[in-house]
Amino acid sequence: MGLVSAIGTGYHGSANPTMRLGRPDGTDSLNPPKALEWIVRAARERSGGRGAVGVNILCAIEGYESAVRASIAGGAQMIVSGAGLPLALPGYVGDADVALVPIVSSGRALSVICKQWQRKYNRLPDAVVLEGPESGGHQGFSHDGCLDPAHTLENILPEVIEERNKWGDFPILVAGGVWDHADIQRFLALGADGVQMGTRFIGTFECDASPIFKEVILRAKAEDIGLMKSPVGLPARGVRTSLQRRIEAGTAPQIRCVSNCLSPCGHGKGAMAVGYCIADRLADAMQGNEESGLFFTGSNGAKLRELVSVRDLIEELTQDPGLQRIYA
Image (cartoon, rainbow, N blue to C red):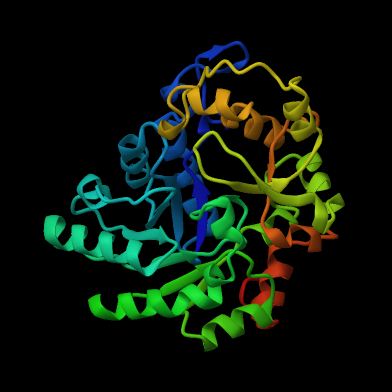
């Protein structure tokens, strides 16, 4: 299964957003539904029916319902949703034939989702992603919680399995710090049904981030990657670059909240509190502006040292060289 992101689609070549001060002007320009619909359709066509195509939609995104509906219109086979509890997601989906996969960081969060979905929509998750505190980007724990050994994937997986078993047998996919075939096998042995991986795919030729983005990650040492404050109020993990030094020195780019990206930021209030606009800085990173970009990666980002093809990476992760013959 492969996922595309629902946020920042206004920067995609298929979009024609209204711009102001060099940025998509407002939520509808930053996340135009038609652009997301086009991206999903293109991904479905490119996949040629080999595997599923889904969309990752942050609960915190402005225009959440519109993003869900655009994903369905584009033919998404799965919606993965976190950065908050996607309690209203089944209502937006209706009777569309799409798998719903919430992201949780605890058994309690899964319990809340299952109770709400079953009571209000007579529906349960088709799978669940359990994300631990080693992932890139925003975390489901406080800063101290991310460092607490009790919150490692190995330690929180049993409680999520226990909670899942109360509701059914839908798959649990673990994420955050999964690096290689051995990690996959280890988590399968602990009771997970699969994994979700992001950081390793930064180091592929096919990753559509700027070559500069990839170079920043490839150059990063373990001590360069860590937690940082975010406008949404929870810590995020990425590479400390000149941006963080400029924030600390008070010389970071001006905060103007042109795009209004995430509701927890309160139209720029969260950005002012931490010294940067996350939409602008992530867009700069994706486009290759090393001076002002924010480069998210998981804790294993420092292990990336070369670029490989997605096919070679999948063969390495699965230890299945037959993939070359199947897809030749």
